[in-house]
Length: 322
Ligand code: NAI
Image (cartoon, rainbow, N blue to C red; front, top):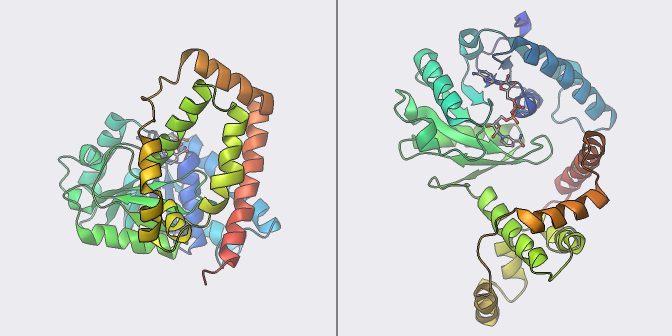
């Protein structure tokens, strides 16, 4: 199935051509890197290639196609593949994108361990499986790490690089350089931890949001506005630590002024919510008033969100830090 012009020599093998595999393929091609796209189900690869062509064409029409190459040039870099051995042959990087199932991923990695070279990086897109579990016992485990993207990866550039204790530093360095080359924003998680960094922050926010709604402090709609019209406005440009630094005369001044108040409020935080029962029903109903939960309304809202993210990405690329 691989097209002759799409040799992955010096390129990337993407294993699994669902939502995330397709996005990775587009990002690598945008960076001028040859991609072999493999899936256990060949129909998925055919569907992915069609979908990528359509997506790239729409992106080019709206002036949002990434990279310096044209749609046709980028498409010529992506080849579908129905043989895993062929997919990884000559690749410098393998990006795994199969479903979030530890056993499935472990079986795949055992298979790859037997056919991969000694200098290729094996990187998992896993959202929350620990790399020490994913790669345990592999002969090539020093070459393995998690590179966790954020959905939709084409518009949200963060990639969390998560090594396990035996990952070679060069594996992280090489993946960091590759991510920078394709225009993503990699961060190094120094040691593995459940939820990595992004989901730990996200869950902390979800948890307090839920408690505030459950305790009747604020309505679900207004809670979301606190983020989208408040905190989120600056968080797209500066993080919570820099926010502290700027909201006083530097970080130490902020700690001096506000640590007592922060600690007082933090002590009032409640237990981990159950995310079920009457509270879940209440939040669900409120969300459905805004976005009914049928596939068509959800898809339309996601499309709107992605359009907003695309425009935000453009704005961020124009706003250079002073
Ligand atoms: P998906 O279900 O859309 O795609 C998975 C693909 O893997 C399917 O095409 C399936 O046919 C294929 N597959 C299954 N077993 C395979 C095997 N043994 N060899 C090759 N291909 C195989 O899943 P999605 O959403 O793309 O997720 C992939 C990974 O990315 C997961 O680990 C997920 O946690 C992670 N991720 C997902 C995000 C999301 O928002 N969907 C965000 C960040 C990471």
